[in-house]
Length: 275
Image 1 (cartoon, rainbow, N blue to C red):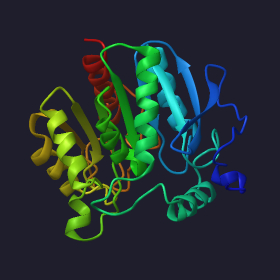
Image 2 (image 1 turned 135 degrees about the vertical axis):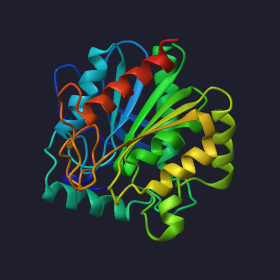
Image 3 (image 1 turned 180 degrees about the vertical axis):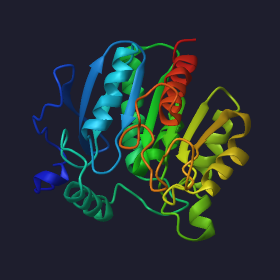
């Protein structure tokens, strides 16, 4: 049992509120328990937060999905729900995930937490029905959105700036963080209806282009990649350091490249979950 409140106590509900449209519950699978916030109605979409946790930008994105007619599940995997994304919270969350056994950082290993996410996706599908479940992962959890598609009910995966495994060396830069057998299963699913959307900024060192090249070569036409120009002097004035496409770096103005990417995410989910 973890005792530090900023770490997120496994096995118990924090009782924290992130908004009146969400209800919190604990979900347990294979002796792992995390708090989940649920809101909305319609087909299910799991939104997996980035570091430092369920910060206001992630919650705002979830609210967009609720407004678009989805039931949103927000698991709190680490961090303090509702706390702003700042340096202190980020350091706390990084310390948490560095020591946690459920988060594997190896290039060719599927993280143990994926089993819990698959179980949550299956439960969400039983509750909500429809063509299937969507999963949106961001940064540290970007790759989990793909790995969760090992669950057959997942038909749409959105990988926003997938930053793990750590892009160290050529192998790490191209890696997807999946066991060979799991990658084979995902490839088979991509040939049978699974669709994957990836988002990244072109100068984002945390999510290198080699990773998208692997996704294209592995998934073929099932993968759609959106790479937003963040080179110095780009027309939209996006900083080369931009990273979080759907949250921190989002400029919510019609026509802005990040807003165009957000609109494509909404359209992509509608194509897969409302057919």
